[in-house]
Length: 121
Image 1 (tube, rainbow, N blue to C red):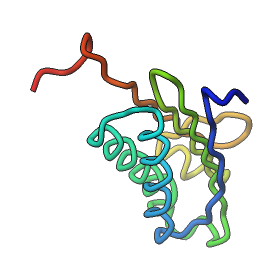
Image 2: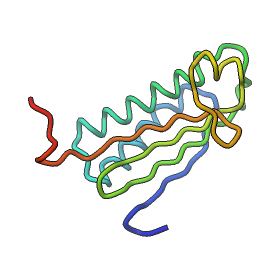
Image 3: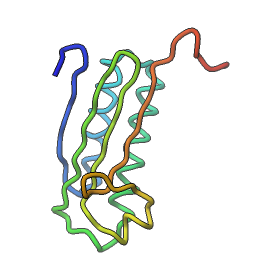
Image 4: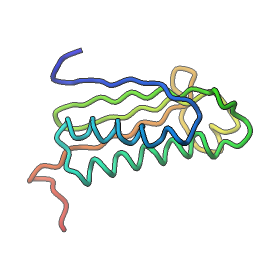
């Protein structure tokens, strides 16, 4: 892996108390990639919401020791967050997660704003 495009990988268990750490990791990667503070917070919030939707809303179908895999890649123009959830067809269908490599997955991407593409305020 190139030093220009670092990647953070981690696993965490089905425990909502860990979402604060998930948000911090995502915000750190977004800051490292040069995203503005509100973009960092927005990506972190979106990631936590995806975790909540993929885990907490699953009900009794998942065991507490279910593991989520998270990969965060920083590129010069964007940050990509991939979340892979434990296999659970009923939940996957109700939450609307696509299946990749045999596991339900969510991919979040946030592009760095440039002067050319900055939204009107």
